[in-house]
Amino acid sequence: MQEAIDPINTSETMNVLFMFIILLVLIGYFTEQWLGYLNHKSGQAKLPDILNNIFSPERYKTYLKYEFESYKFTTLVSLIKFLLSIFMLLCGFILLDNFVSGITENQVFRGLIFFGILGLVTDLLFTPFDIYDTFVIEEKFGFNKTTPGIYLSDKLKTYLIAAIVGGGMLSLIIWFYQVSGNNFWWIAWAVISGFSVFMAMFYSSLIVPLFNKQTPLQSGLLRERLNQLATDTGFMLKDIYVIDGSKRSTKANAYFAGLGKKRRIVLYDRLIEEQTVDEIAAVMAHEIGHYKLNHIQKSILIGIFQTGIMLWLFSLLVHNSLIYESLGAVHQNFHLGLVIFMILYSPFSMMISIGMNSLSRKFEFQADKFSSGYVDSMYLISALKKLASNNLTNLTPHKLFVKVYHSHPPLLARIQNLIKIRN
Image (cartoon, rainbow, N blue to C red; front, side):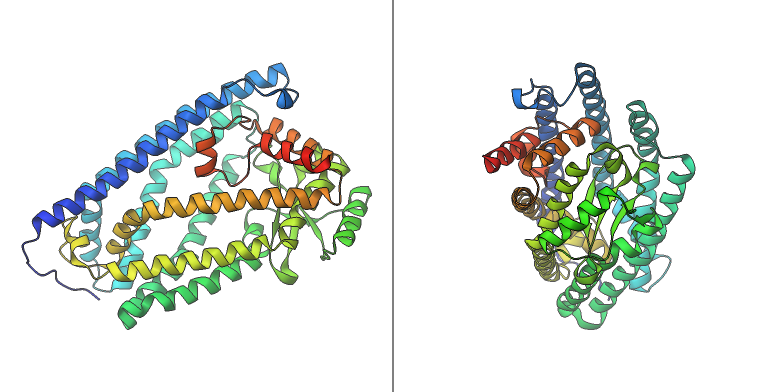
């Protein structure tokens, strides 16, 4: 659905809107840099007494070096992304839109080519930085286990998934827009919501195996302990899986995935190597807590609601010629409107993200409390300390940075809460 923009003299309004878009990008960038700087300085602060035994003196020196190099690298990449964003707003999006418009009249194909080129070129531009981060910084501090072959394979698989899943969803949304006009938003909402639930159920069994092997936990003391824990908590599941995360990184973790009969708990192989049976049981009890307390379902429902609001707002703006004219567009192409809308929506997205992170941190405290009801909380404290030490985690993040970006509470807050529960 392509409409020529009416030649109405609205240059002043267009200029104001364009400057507003630029201002949003500037505010976003400088806010990110300010928060990053605060967090960097806070990460170098003296550790509280309760955290003093996490890092050995040598490990703490390594942490400070890792934190500093990561901060410098992140700052550089953020600057380049910011400059690229400004370039795209000044002329890049229009040049790409004009190029795509000269290839085909079909709006679906235009959208696919537009975002395909945009995504591919952006990824290729930042691949050297990603390679440096993986094979230089992470390698230097003993984290990287990725080989060039695995890296290239992961990259190609990610492109394939993006083309199939992302391209498929985008095609449907543009087609809905063409056939139903402004009513497209609720149809797209229904489809995206259904897909979100599907992925929540099957991601671990469909997508993860493309990158990692998941094998059932072998019989033994650990398996018996976790089976008993599952019985005690009323969390019956077919199997507990071990993922070969060590083929990419030495960093360890555990996570819960799936819904209903498709639910599963996945333990990283490094976690099993580094933690005791009781510590792993405490971590698993925490993951079970997320399910028993309906955290997964609540997060999915909130995400679905947010998507509906976003699509509805987009439907109100997609026909407004001013948002296209502000960038100098000749025609109203859906894909260009979507790009502009996402920039305008960014302040709301940030506020929603802050709210969701706050809720997520609350969920983590609740899952910790649940775990303490079945496994002594000191084992979870011990497990968390080991994870922090092995992963060189920032133990003193800035409060504002935590509020904006962290989905998990700082380690100090979790330990204090667990000690309070235990006492």
